[in-house]
Image (tube, rainbow, N blue to C red; front, side, top):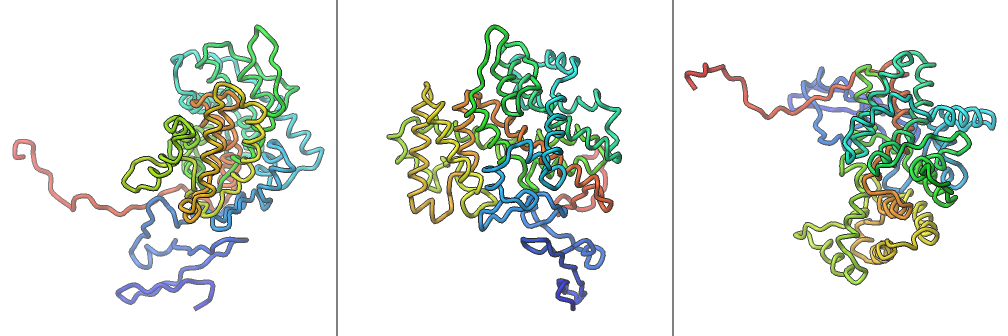
Length: 431
């Protein structure tokens, strides 16, 4: 038996050699593609927590060591030296761009931010209080009706056009959703502003007076988008891949990813952090709530601490923590100051408490991102929308990778059936 195969012997003595595939780094994977044919059984892995659903060369995570890399580059280096547009290029094309490549890509994104006027009219069909994520998903899904002439998924040029278009237009769609909620006119994008500056302009500018963009706010958004750009085969990314595996147009696949991200267990975690802080209410109440969090019989949980993948400190949290303090020092002196003081004190308590240290319950990226968004004046309902803007490029990179894979096939998981066994139909008069 080769060392590159896993030997499996069933109870009836049937033997199978399951190939073992080795990646560049990280755990090996056992290929179970022939298991049902040879052994007559499926594997059972609820939530796919120990299943490799695909091969990918985009992002690598080592949860035990607290490592996150995009295309081999540690996220710490990208956060310190790069910017979101350059990271977008890296994720989409696999390499850091040359100066000329970066300028052309940046120009392409800047000049494709406007929406078709018919798409802006689409927003008038929503109630004034429609959740921004509902608007985002619906409008992105509608894009295939406006750009149907460039949705041939097998055409590399069409895939490239889609990638540039979705990255460029998603902030415009997001800002329009916000403006609908607050009853203000839509603000058109400006080509002279960079990605994060343009988003702030579309969110907070009004026709009646000039709007001055705070460079710290733009810097914070750019960093958040870098840290949220991709995270391997998470729920929303896997949803994009599964939807796209049917051959569906890319806009509908991204809309599916947005819908998956909307779930409170995925993209809504930073919103839950703010609700938790509001429930605690005051710094003096922290000891009480920390004890509640330690009590297994108490339903209260500290949101924004720990991570399903990272069993060490979330590397993104280490980076964003500095920015959170920088933003609060610059922008946090407002009515929410007590809430920010509460967040900072809770952070310190959790970092020193043996209960949390022993269980690796460190503050994660959601704890700090919610605090930053609040300080920037972004409402809680928009938190997951902001997450979507950053994650969109990761979804697009995974979509492109999957569509370009000649061995790709439609996703079709199997199940453990626990329903009734075979039974005969009984006419309604005899039941």
